[in-house]
Image (cartoon, rainbow, N blue to C red):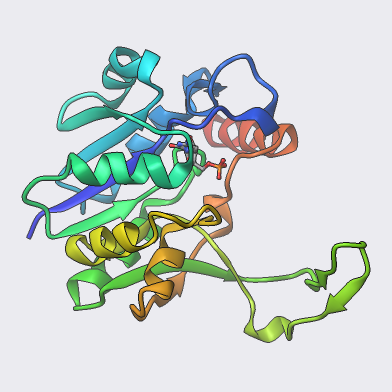
Length: 223
Ligand code: C5P
């Protein structure tokens, strides 16, 4: 049963404001991508890694990803990058899609997702309870509603899938331009999505504040 990790790393990282694409920005002196790949390797549950990189950084991505990894070029949107990675998947039963931006994800989260898949689930996502109250708003900026917080979860990666399930879901969602994660394509395709506990350390490095938090966590590890 081959389990492959697919790492979307082709985003521009505009919100981080750096000169480099986000996955190539430094954290503790190493690219974010290098941290994400190391976490996947440390989990011990991944047979092969496919990195989806910007078209002009394929060689650099391969060098960072190291052995037992391959690199393909990404697309305009994250979903396009995931589809490019899926097209390059051969002979895998399960795929874990893991954002390079979640650089400090503990291996234990990766193991939890893989084990739930191996036990027979079609789709598995790591989640955390939400601490803020979350509101929906209308187009004028007025509150439209307040979903019950106890039913809400913040979603992380890696998100794990049986390969044919994710392929079919992404093919069916080809026309959608509002996919913010891969589970969403599965939900719309009628696939039950199982949740497992995530971890606060699997936060996505999106803003300069996130990067500062990650830097201090890495520095504390080195002490
Ligand atoms: O933009 P966002 O933070 O949601 O991106 C999540 C992940 O998807 C990042 O690791 C980013 O590099 C990747 N991505 C991609 N191709 C895109 C856009 C984002 O691989 N076109």
